[in-house]
Length: 185
Image (cartoon, rainbow, N blue to C red; front, side, top):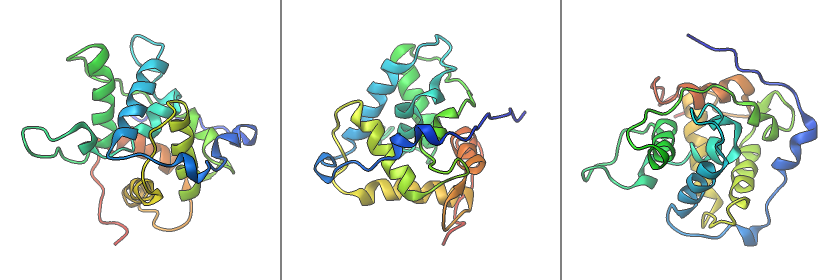
């Protein structure tokens, strides 16, 4: 059943959307996704992991592609970014435990600058801001993060402009369970 996702306008928290200097945007491979996973693990306070989506490293790390975990039995898993990232975090703390299905996405208040939509630039800035907590490494090229955005935009079927807050939130809550692709071709 759909839970109500409290999303409140908060321009005061828009500092998280500030641009990160280019010199901080260096790194290699998918090491930045692993850094977000480690930071996420350290931020979670609740034993039941219900605060997972309350932390930017957890939320934005969930946008990492599934292959950051490495191939499973020689083949890459079906693209279920959020679920796989959750399992990577939870599995390190409690192997075999299913991840929570939390729907607390208030962290989006820090990403959106208007409280109504999340733009590609909001997402990029939020992603790099989340990496700041781990001191990197950073992606080699901003196009890597833009590709993560493109997947989210395609899933939500909002192919240009900002993605409405609720649609963006839906991606993180439901994309592992509801397939939606090929909308923005």
